[in-house]
Image (spheres, rainbow, N blue to C red):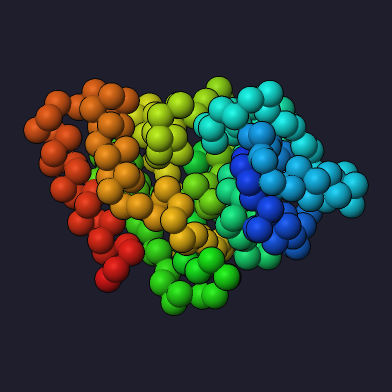
Length: 250
């Protein structure tokens, strides 16, 4: 049986420091039937030149450049519209995959008839050094679970679009968590492959490293996207905050 195509979605913006290593981690996959759709959000550095060189080396790399800087959500949505694979996987421009990530995750989803999967992952520093911190996720997460815990790493997610179609990331940060909630609210569960198959890079002075900004964005998801009342929002936020402390510091 022919292996199904995986469409890998990567938004970039001034990613010249890391993008080559990120793309190489995709090209080094043991599972080779993929297309890597990279959407550049009007970078002002030499990211685009690096990408053009990479595209010449590998026909599976598909490039698109936004007309104006629009943010990661809209860049990802442009890539999703171009995707031809049965599976869609997400990888940000500074993160990395372990070589067997696609192989094991496709097998996991096929064997268990799963629509939405994710994996454990480890954290690395800006220079790629292992921080000896692995995010170990529950085997299954439903909508209410995710309201309390942003344990699903975007860099680990894979979705079967034969089962979950019309994927659109809301233009509301964190856009990835907002999309996962949108999917799970329909009654789907997300299933974790209990292996660490990706590396999340912690970049100094990035927005994601500012926990106050991240917390405010999560509160807006509760109130503006999920339309939760203040009391429910506060309850879920307390759980989210505790789980975030455990993930990053304990």
